[in-house]
Image (cartoon, rainbow, N blue to C red; front, side, top):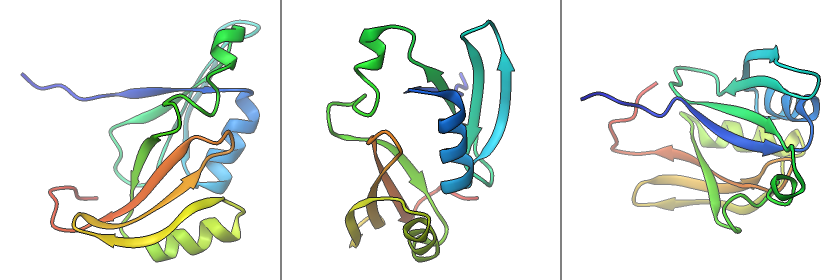
Length: 135
């Protein structure tokens, strides 16, 4: 059997502000932006390079969904972004106003730092070592 995760839904406040953040600040690619109804769009973004998984930016449609924006995991790191050069990305992201909550540090699995997205979700930015992950 062969399976993979295709998309991860990320609840957002506004489609356009989320697209701007992910494409301009994180340099993700806009994969699709299709209008489904007056209030719903199918919006996918993905990091540059060879990514098999994309984020589905899902605008909150109810007060309960809106209450989860920025805290989808109860304050834990939510997403993990691998990079081939953490220092390049760390400096560029700082210059673009990304808030880091943890400075880069060396761990057994690589160099890691933690940043917030525009809504406050926590992300690990990782330059892995000795892993099967490749670009």
